[in-house]
Length: 73
Ligand SMILES: [Zn+2]
Image (tube, rainbow, N blue to C red; front, top):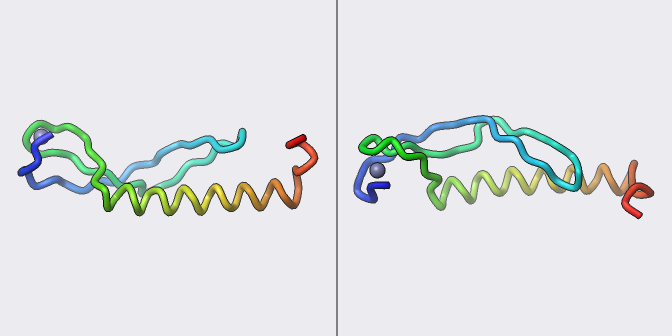
């Protein structure tokens, strides 16, 4: 990627799996380099994306603790 290029911010839907649960998140951020068209994720975008992924992980954790804890044995 071109460090000096002005990256174009984009959003996409990403699919994840956590503890056997599949989930998808809309508006996951990434950027495209206008010079070479490579896709990159900036550190700030990674931070925001990961915060949202962690939220989902916590939801799944909560789901497990309340409903499916016996299946974790
Ligand atoms: Zn580039």
